[in-house]
Image (cartoon, rainbow, N blue to C red; front, side):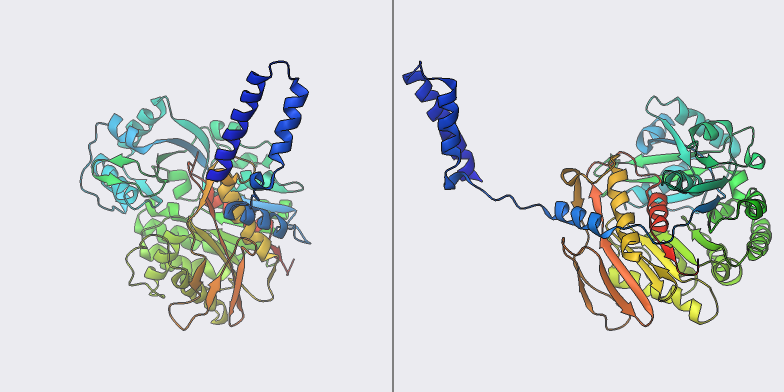
Length: 491
């Protein structure tokens, strides 16, 4: 590289010298001399593509449309308006100063908000919490909205997945949730909303973002991420679930995407148990030819998670989407593999993640679930696992999910290799609970596959945006894209 730079400088100096000694020389002659020197072997350098360029190009060649597409997708039930702004700037505007970090399952006051935000910021982890005090939350949301840098976006897992899917050609998307006037204005016009889902007021969620390396007091964020909280009663009670299910007969979708169960943590224990049973009873009436995907989100209540796994929802679904926080909490709640682990340290170990996913899918064989597909996503890599004979085109699905993560975080249509970086391991063990095989990925072959019994795993790295524009909704875009490129063989 240095040789090339020196050669270019000498070329420029020589051209200048010739022009000074022979002022009458023509521009054409100078151009000819310059081109002749440039053609010398010493100035020819092969430029091989970077790992990021090679990986992105390999994804593009791997990603193909499924033979059978969904056509119609019904989605519900959590929808809101996201107010996105800097977490540190909001806490400062509220008069809060850095304090000791601590995790609170439910936020009851400003101090618990500050403490929990710091807890997750210093880990670079995403989290979502319910804020119990309506009056205090109104003050916080008003302060946030007045911030000149605050932005308003479509929010809620269901609405975000609907937005992503509606942009795909040939898709008809029905969204049911609490849709207020601002949210209705923000939604893609191709998203169908039944009149029964419309309401007079919006539900607002506050998204506190932080950048990699950002400081608040003694805490320093290792990666960019966000902390979400709300006082959302409509989504918490899943009031739109019955509207969604009542719409299925007329709409007749091939795929139903459910989300928002985590919002029930804001209900009292008794109301939560009752509502979960009602929801499960309604879901069990869905025709068996409709594939059901459940999108999980951050939860802290083990009883709620156990109810979802064992008694209410898992026995009814075919597909599951979740991230590293939700995966570990699921295992902790049900005494699954590696449940003694308190939290991930850095990038989640691939072998451990594989063990937990394998355990989840084994429930199918034990009659505890109809679940045949798990799509796991974390910052550095994604894993998609399926029971053989139920799904096709999963190499495309996992690659498409990873590709959209890097592009959307940078707010670009395609991957820009100069704006992304790799943090994923390129060699790892497929299991920590048993003797696993060593798996490798390369830029030319970015999707690795391996089997455990009749379960096939698909792994691919993620190209992480160096300076992300917006982190909210990445998980929903990943799951949506993975579903769009998936083919259910029972369709």
